[in-house]
Amino acid sequence: MKIKNIFVSFLVIMIGWMLLTWSLDVSSVLIGTGISLALSVVLCGSCNLFSEINLTPKAFAYFFWYIIVFLIELVKANIDVTRRVLSPSMPINPGIVKVQTTLKSKMARLILANSITLTPGTFTIEITDDALYIHWIDVEAEDVKGATNAIVRKFEKLLEVMYG
Amino acid sequence: MDNIIIYISIAMLMGTLLAGLIRFVKGPSVVDRVVAFDSMTVTSLVMIGVIAFLSNRAIYLDVAVVYGFLSFLGVIIVAKYIQGGL
Amino acid sequence: MEIIGQIFLLMGSFSLMTAAIGLLRMPDVYNRVQTGTKASTLGAIMSFIGLALMAYESWGEINWVGRFAVLVVFIILTNPVSSHVLMRAAYAMKIPLSKLTTVDKLREDINNKVLEEPKDE
Image 1 (cartoon, rainbow over the protein chains, first blue to last red):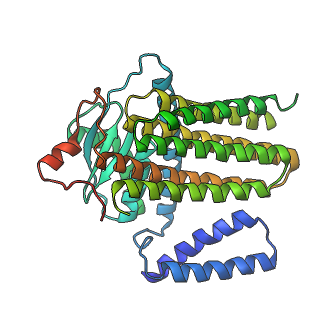
Image 2 (image 1 turned 180 degrees about the vertical axis):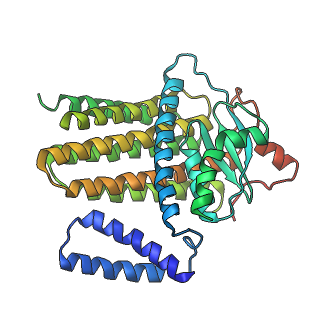
Image 3 (image 1 turned 120 degrees about the horizontal axis):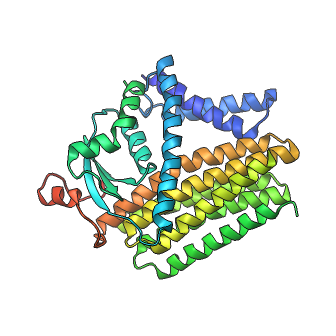
């Protein structure tokens, strides 16, 4: 699926260009289109970063829903960190746990790992084919199943739709 | 006295830079120092934004974008180096 | 509008300061990386949103908003990656975990030969 790769990377580069220049002149848009097309063909002609993404309306809807869920988790993470740092006794109980994931696509696992890093109290250390090792600042469940339910499930069910 | 909240924010950002500098000097291991450097970089990005707002120059924001990108590359390269892969 | 922007900027600065206090107080390097990453990411995002609101209110120049949007997306994408690489480097250097640590499944799996020592490919 070379065409899909080139198309998605062209869209990403073009949106970046439009945001940075912020003008709708004909010359500016033409130059941007040319540069984005050349860059996406040269850089992403042989990569397969975006080949597993689903370009359906349902996937787009889930993408925006994912962003909302992610932002809520980010704010919750910050409140959590503030509470832990500012309380005098520092209620931490750290440990490294192992969780399972069923996602196959590389890009989906990358997004999953980054999201876990920015959600409350968890941080990805190491990632293998089907497991992630997570540093948890307040361990609630030491076994694989409980940790998977607590950390991974809420993102995984959205990512499964986006990445087939 | 229109900008009093902005000045309070600048004072807090200065405190952040100071705390990062203390961890940078004290840090027992290399990774502590790199983390402190990373946190100081993000603080400096915000500070560049505040200065651009106060002096009304949009061109400073481009400096912030490039600075953030270079800092990201720097942290990655240092981490790779102390891991023994470079 | 402007007061909302100022409140956002103040909350972002407070969040960044929380990150720095966490850097000073936490017992070992892993917890320091955690607090530093999370609090500083959200702090920078909120400060940029506040500055964008203030700039739009003051001059009505929309091109500031585009640059702040680029900065926000850039920080969301790069900050977790660099922190993850740092954490992995710290684990490969065998920096000891703090006394409070309860469980270490990664070390168990390395000792049981399920997994190799994390190092570079």
